[in-house]
Image (cartoon, rainbow, N blue to C red):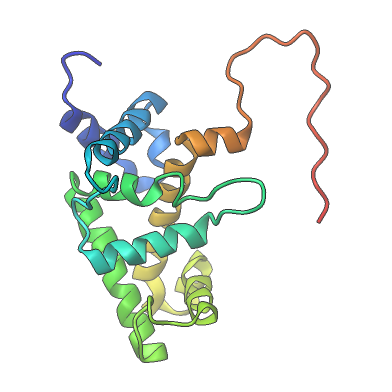
Length: 197
């Protein structure tokens, strides 16, 4: 990517992505570069941590909890937080005013919704209350029956796409897919059986 600045890559990552998955419009190499930028910042930081570029501390903490709820870690794999989704989303948001409005506004909407419904912000809510709130905004049909949920539904849809894209373009997410790339196989035994729970 010689001749292209990191800032240009970040801007290009966000152009038009609000319509759906970020990965529909950008190459994986660009997403990989965003992950590398986060990794380099963590490596050069004395504390080894990422410093949010756009979201204030409380909103970044809420973003982190939401990413963890969207793709939690399990016995098989690490989750979205370990895959760097909050950092990826913050970095992209820092370069895109539409993301700033949609995601920043969405986090504010979520806190207001929880305050009206539970008399506390999303982070202060009990896990069952958090799940209940997300269940209401996870489905477009809920906004059709209750238009007051429209902003929350739009926000959560974009956040879910961005979290998924961030996770599955990270090393952890690619390992979770067991993707081996364009590799010739002498024999293809078929797909592994789906695990029964």
